[in-house]
Image (cartoon, rainbow over all chains, first blue to last red; front, side):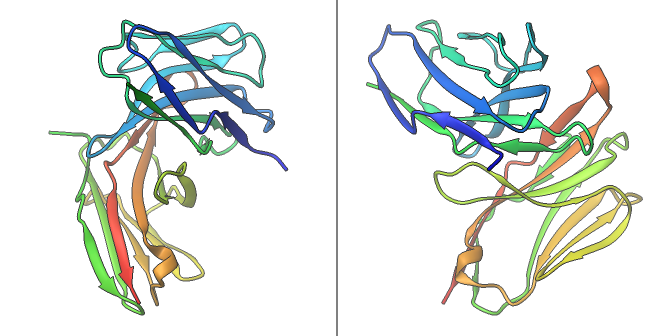
Length: 112
Length: 113
């Protein structure tokens, strides 16, 4: 089955720690995206990558970092510099033919 | 003014009702329009996709676009408790390196049995 997987589903972190969220897709999509979702705020774009070894900042990139070494993988690191990291994180990839995005199941990060 | 406005609700209806969900937008550069459904603690799933003014039907769902009024709607007929979710409108402008997908904030729908 083609799709996007994210792991872990739930993640707990102590303040001051960096954590990395995994995102893998087998849809053969070139472009991948990371969003953050907070109650009442909708989806906000953190980082995106249109091709391997290239990525750009989104609207709220501060305190986050990414890499894109493989087409299938786009991990997101939430660093200790992110002031309010507790949120629901969503990864997506984009269908080149329709420009629509398909989402993974999400990772809920809680900072203790 | 935000580029995409969506009433957050919440919206509560009885089973079998017709539901109307709406978004307005301010930028005429938006070319493609989508509706996503998001169940609690899950990722959004693409429900409807359209690019022209008019109606597009898929089972109990109808997406309507009025580009002249900058207004899109999603209608759900014979609503079911399983339709209870947050519905997000989304719009695309540009292409290639200028591609931009903008979401509404979502409307929380509850269908009561």
